[in-house]
Length: 86
Image 1 (cartoon, rainbow, N blue to C red):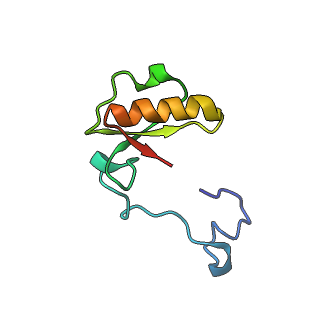
Image 2: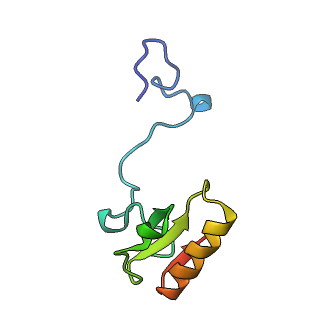
Image 3: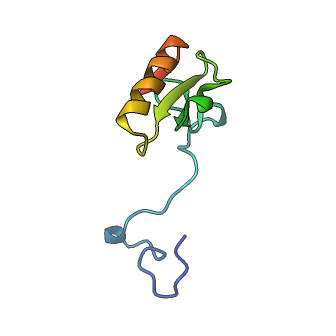
């Protein structure tokens, strides 16, 4: 929230953008979920796949993971029935 004395956004000038208002948030039960309905989990190693539920979790492989390890993680995830997000 803008706090400055002369802040145009605090004074709600049209050109400076609207302030966030309550009322249009998503329900708490689905907040932070992927649009497909799964909870998104970042994966960097094969150990990160342990304990994930295919009905509840979807996997996103980290950007710093190399090609060789990425293919291994992707094969293990699909074998376990997990959805791999791209």
